[in-house]
Image (cartoon, rainbow, N blue to C red; front, side, top):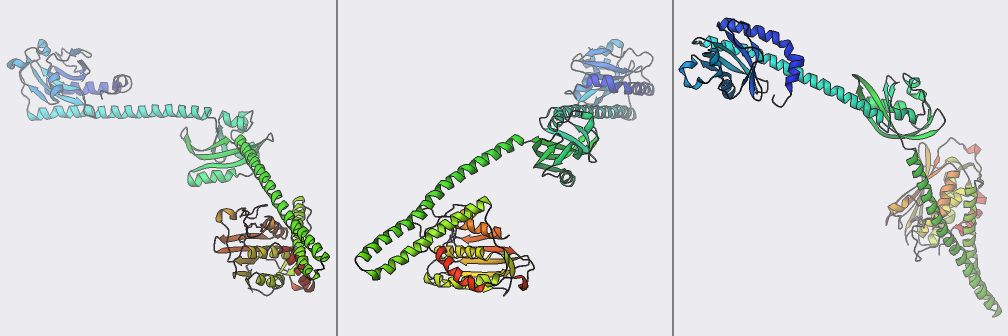
Length: 561
Ligand code: ADP
């Protein structure tokens, strides 16, 4: 116990409680042994102090008497050896010739060390007599009993001391904790049974609350106008279930109407002996706003880059057919002058194909502009989608075969009525089929399948061509994206085809997805909601479809050469 400053503690708090008891013990001990002096000595750095002295006749020792160490005291020997010491008659032993106790004529001694619970020496308990004394083993045993009483009390003292220390420490921690919460820049609210029990300065500031008393005891939600996309009850539930919730972001609208973005974390905490839910709110409004601006800026930069690229593509798309047409016209002119009429037909075909290409690019441009402006009109009616897809497939199969490819059509159902625009379905299918030809391989296959799922109808257009790199698949439906930007592209294209397809699909309430693997092939799946429509409601326009589709196919397939 040397390292503990227990003295003042013992004096002030504990020892007072034991002094009386120890005095009675030592008095009884002196009486039992029939000696003039029974003592409890307490050791400090340099001396031994009389802590208790028996109230017996002829006792020369007084409480608080101090005896210097290294002066040859009996008790000093006990402390050094940490053992019992019995001296029958000191006068018979030269060792004790200078013993200060002899000046009181104390020639016999029986003493043992008293230890702190950690084994360090507290002091001694002893009896002294002016007569020669021989103590039997029973008497020697007895002094151990007295020592045990004192050591038991010392254990209690230390126990009490440690408890007091812990309580003090907890109190200090509690105060520090309270202070910490108060000065924390994050807003903190303590909640119990869904009611606010306390809040720190930052919380009042964050929530723009003037009168602090107003919110104590109120419901958490009453101090907020509304939570835009965050559920405070869910956070509280999360803490109750998991013990903590961390970094949940959301926005709230304060009572004064200001909207804030907050990050919520929450856990249990003990405060003044009670269990609370601590809700920590971090204001991330500035960060979110700057992130949004940054993202917007990046998007604008990207859109700008894509727009520039798009215009250069479009210029190329427009110029190439015009150049070809111009050259063909010149050749026709020359042949006509030279009366080589038979050759004119060939150049006419070239001119026609390039006119289709121009019409395709211009149509796409017009449509995308209309969609952007929100004025694209679709003509939704009930149609048998199986019939429609089959017709389109068979109408274009000569084109597909012309490109040395094979087309396979299969369907799970013969009839499926959905709400759609036949014109848009044709454009979608022709676009996807022209891509399947463009990016398919020679002698490759194109599979068209219709699947009847519970909630939807899936139309799949699958090829076994070059496929699309995984990192490009996310952006493939974005405007102006062309996977292969090199000048050595196999085919021409403006990169708006798929974005237009997606827009057309969505205009009819559908979705489009892609599954593709490089070198294996691509599968585009268009899904439309499976609603209950019947034959009676549908419009049949088979004849129009066939002639119309050939014109459309000429246009959509015009860039395959
Ligand atoms: P484009 O007019 O260039 O064909 P699209 O929007 O139709 O423009 O297609 C965008 C890009 O997606 C194409 O340039 C091509 O790289 C890729 N792509 C589209 N369909 C397929 C497919 N079936 N197989 C492989 N790549 C494809």
